[in-house]
Amino acid sequence: MFWKKKNPETDVIRNASDEQRKSYRYDFKDNEGFEIDFKEKKVWVLNISAGGIAFSNQGFKQFDFDFIKFTLDIPNFIGDSSFFAGLRILKIDKNDVCHCIFEQCSLEQHELIHKYVLEMQKHDLAH
Image (cartoon, rainbow, N blue to C red; front, side):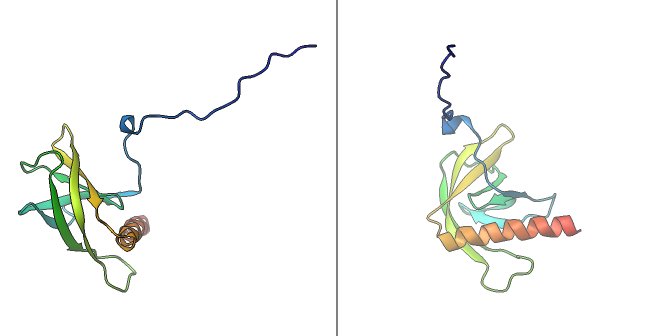
């Protein structure tokens, strides 16, 4: 008896630019975000993840860059929750929202954002 030999299974490799970046992200409810200064303008953060943030466009252009700083109000956290990193606009979508990535950001700063996102999600579930 002969069996047809099966082709070996392989993983499909997709072009990263075809997929939206994935990370744990916290979307703020209306008027519950926080404000940062970006290129000498005040903007309200719409969502945050360890990879970056999003905010409404105020005349910015793709790839604009600035250093930002803010302090996170993290529930159940004792310690320094100040954040400092570079921020670059990767994309401005059809709704005029700037999607940004943190640059020159230390591992400790990334972990601080992860902690913030986790605690905010837990806080929302509890309430």
